[in-house]
Amino acid sequence: MSTLTERLQGGPEWLKSWDPENEDTWDSRLAWQTLWITTFSLIMCFAAWFLPSAIVPKLNAIGYTFTQVQLYWLAAIPGLSGGLMRLVWMVLPPIMGTRKMVAATTLLLFFPVLGWGVRSMSPDAPYWELVVLAFLAGIGGGAFSGFMPSTSYFFPRRMQGTALGLQAGIGNFGVSLVQLLTPWLIGLGFLWWLGQSQMMKRPGRPDLEVWYQAASFVWLPFILIGAWIAWQYLKSVPIKANIKQQFDIFGNPDTWWMTILYIMTFGTFSGLSAQFGLLMINLYGTGNAGIVQGTGADAQILIAGYSVPDPAAYVFLGPLVGAGARVLFAPLTDRMGGAIWTLVSGIGLAGSIAWTIPSLTPDLTSADTLQGGFNQFLWGMLAIFLFTGIGNASTFKQMPMIFERRQAGGVIGWTGAIAAFGPFLFGVGLTIMSPTTFYWIGVAWAIACIGITWWRYARPGAPKKS
Image (tube, rainbow, N blue to C red; front, side, top):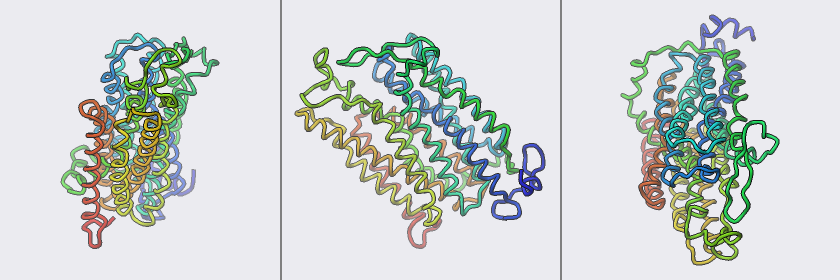
């Protein structure tokens, strides 16, 4: 432990004095150590939160018989619970401190992840049990609204864009990891010792023996390691406030404006991350009854030359692009300010969503039009993810510049909580209306956010230039 940290430390957990704006009372080594430990735990949180989105699209293939609506709801429920739990986690940093909050949260992930593994082994669980497991997966989503504010306490304002961008962006990679590794892990035959295998049905091809529980069980040791490291090495900043005191953020109009902007960015990122695979299946895959015809080898083909895409080969790309953009653009927000990049994000989202809309109604007249529609859908979705990542980085730079330190932490937690409802709102939206209608609503929302950003934060003479 450094000499400076020894002077600042008041006990085994709480620091005695901590002001990142003052070099005499700030230890950069401890700040960065805190960031990397909590970021590792945040990766586990996002993996646990989006684990259902990787498993749900294949549940019927391994033996379940759920309807399309039931599957949409299973993929949406972690977003609902994640948003609700973020409303709890947002007030925990000043009450519990970083050490207890991160260690306890990471340990709690063990239970839903274990449950999904057990229920993947025996595809006869009642629907309500999977609903409960999907809800508990929201613990991983709730963590974000506690981890990010607590990390913001450790860094000066001039570095918070980079620090929070790195933590959130690398943490978001947990989404891509779970979606990328799942199809690979389930096919590894040497994992037989993890439990009984399943036979996964594949249209037009022989059934494949898989170990779907491996997609869950692989995370369990890392979760336990993360909880132990957090308890062993993290400290807590002496910023104290009870729940009532923390509610003063709601009297500030910028809390509400930034909430609207963060729904545009992280709400879209999380919502599409959860629904990307199901949307692809229903538009261009086996969920579109007009595409899959015939039996045997012909079941994969509607028109000669068009093969049904495998969502597992693409679904991880969206979250990967979004998380990578958040990491890469975070330092730019520190140099140029956040508002200008939020403006870029809004313009890019409006354009990319509008460009994607024609591909949401596949043209079945020929193989070329089907393939062209799928290509437009895929590239449009990746563009949407790119601009959400830019906006996720820029809004988290803006908030510490607009609010004082404790309020900034609270607003980060609050906006993250509301935007975490993205998977739920997207699941409900795609259930009760057509994808085309839902996407046009997204275009309108992005245009409104462009106006808010320009008027309040980006224009010359803006009230809260950030």
